[in-house]
Length: 168
Image (cartoon, rainbow, N blue to C red; front, side, top):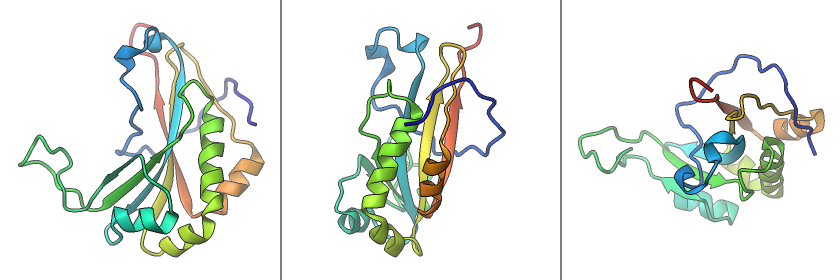
């Protein structure tokens, strides 16, 4: 398992499809004062429907969004999705280190590597990770072996960082 510690974080490209928290933080006393981490596997495609991805992987997603549907159903005049999105959230609690979330999703991908490779010409894959430094500092290490295993799967790694609120 990876080590958790402070580290310099190099510049990164950030996605507009941020990881959503699995629960409402207002229900978690002290959640604004603690660090948290989560991750999800995302599969996007303008061609393959979410139901077909679910069938190909023999795995139920946490959520799906179909192409040509409203991004926000409460805004009928709003943006329309240009591609479908299939999301599998890490099953681990957000108190676990980011490395644990990545490793769990990596294991799920490795169990279905042939199915992912079949989908790869028509889909894009990423592992979207989020790390909050509400305590003022947070970091993570992905060991070389984990990075090697990730590189064997055709997916991008997305990292969203959530710094402490202003004044902390």
